[in-house]
Image (cartoon, one colour):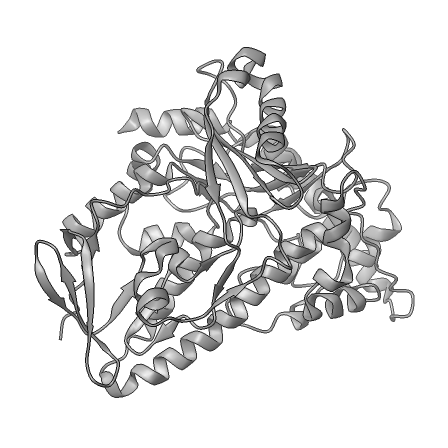
Length: 482
């Protein structure tokens, strides 16, 4: 029996249109639904993202930065390179020692060549994109190519059966819309799971404080200006600033804690950040959108025949582009566990909830890791983040463990971890964390193998520097070819 999908979209509710960073899983998502990568790049003002560059998170000094690249450390599955790297840590940053990608990104290079097939990669990548254009693009593709029915109407009521399952949605112009499964994508309003089912909201603000954001779109000063290959994340006194390069503009925003900064001070900080790149006059006249964030998530995500995806399930903050990755994972699990009948609905719901309660906890652990490792003392924001009362128990346990053995796959047991052990390694050692592994047996063969991988990585760096075009050159060529 065929599956029919209907999207009901209110004409009265504007989209937020700010989220511009993705995770490498987006390539497989787009490929699976039959999207042309070239068309997507052209129509969504998309560019390549190869990871994140964190500036000022450790000490706040001018020389303070590290990379979290999307490529796994070279030799990751063969040997633990960290003991060998720590012996020679003064020679190179951890990410530089084990990955060619930071150098590729520093040079503003693309992750592939013009002849590389769509969705294939020379080095792993995701995208930066215009979120508003992406929504329109997906809507058109899904309706034209995948048979999705799109109804523009406002949902006025929710009708349920006696046993609590949603039977239909009452709309203003199209009457009652019946379905077997209802996916709540109503954003922060959480109309079905939050309002109808009154599923409790679990605040995580005691762990991650950011509850405000200022966002602005910034033009390039020259049409041939280099496009950053990473999300730039610059730490501030009460939060951090994202800076995302698209082909036609930059998306910049300051996410911060209202308990540690006034809105006026946040505006001043963002204008000060913008001034060096666009000039004092343009920075002073830039118009910011303010967004309020309620960091947290629902206690469960699937009730009866209703499952929440995206902001209706929860939102923490934009660090590490976890929000869109959770949307992708949610959609994939719904697809793969679609209950064949009502009797299986509760089983699907229980399995979904178990998986996503785990995933939300791991997202929060990983985001918190960025803050607890900081040595900044210029504001209470950073010292409050290091307070043990704000650190989740599992993260604290892992930090205690990692003082004597480095993060490994044994620490993360799910088959689809949103952030694998390699991501924790990049952040830990990028932030200057030290692992005292002197008590562990160290084989000379492992040290030799690690040093061989370090050498191979250096060779790979030179090969990529010679063979990859710039981000802008490749993106221009793709748009010109259509």
